[in-house]
Image (cartoon, rainbow, N blue to C red; front, side, top):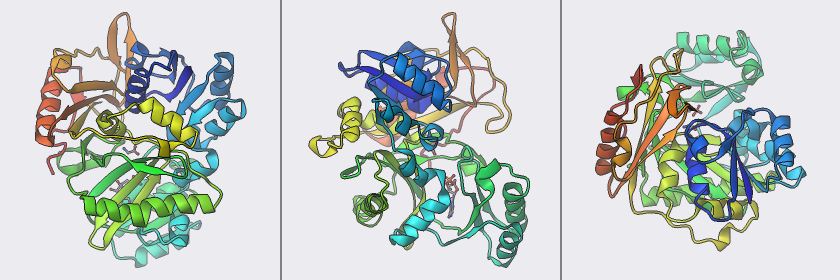
Length: 418
Ligand code: AMP
Ligand code: GLY
């Protein structure tokens, strides 16, 4: 089969690496891909948001199967367009991807179907939002309705911060149309858990749980990022909590989407908070998390591409999906300055990192030129180690990190320490 992966980060690199192992995959392309992916797939410089470009490429290269990994093309309807020309896809249609692309839609769905989440109010008017914030006990959470490259959420500790966030969204239009409507939410407390789940709209199979580390600096300080590292499984997510989530959150979400005529096929991302009153949904994403995918997909003990095909063909119930009895620690190596401004174009020296057993290095923002790798993004590499238990995985991941060098390299040294 001719297979196409859309996207160009660490998530797409781990997907490409595991998909390429399946003998059914004869030719693999990535749009746009990156330096690491270029060693496995043919990378073509078409943006993941250029839906016309993607569709034309798929048609002219006789693509049989496409994996649409990032949020933007899913929200723009890439799956619908590709399926309409006969390309089978892994990923939800646009009308199901709305579970991520509109936080208001997601909240209203949860309310309609009694799925536990933080209390909230929707605002379309600046003054009403400001007066509500002024009357609320802080902390409160301000969220832009639409996609905002992971930057649309502010946990405001006081009214001043809430006011700044509301003005930035609704008046200064920091996120364009995505911030015209906002949510103001109750602030929940407790450990956060990510659960990625394969679903074909009938069966839902959660993968091993994980803990993302969203803040830029050690001790969970600094600005939010796309994710600076992952521990998997998540230490707080017991079997009992998992059963509870299946009953009260995962199955009800799939059923709710079906009832609304929005069958979801792909990977559904549950961002949960384990509060004193039980697990509650913080957010849904309509795709694999990044960097969660880099930590969790290597823990699968079966073929990834067969799962993706089964999800598309609604045959997930026919598979026996197994997981390794192991743990992952994933550390992101970023460019100094990220998530703000940073410089790139620096050569990467991998040292002896590839000699450490259980370590895999996924490229998030790199390019490959004349036999050498150079930095080309805020998040540069995801260094993942697997071992029989988490402390051993963590030791190996940091051993590998210590072998790697590039100018202005920065990382968190406390992944999985809390
Ligand atoms: P999101 O962009 O939706 O992933 O949100 C970013 C981060 O904001 C989450 O990972 C949480 O740490 C935090 N957050 C979002 N909603 C809430 C909430 N209702 N209560 C507490 N923290 C929240
Ligand atoms: N790591 C969080 C996300 O992918 O949204």
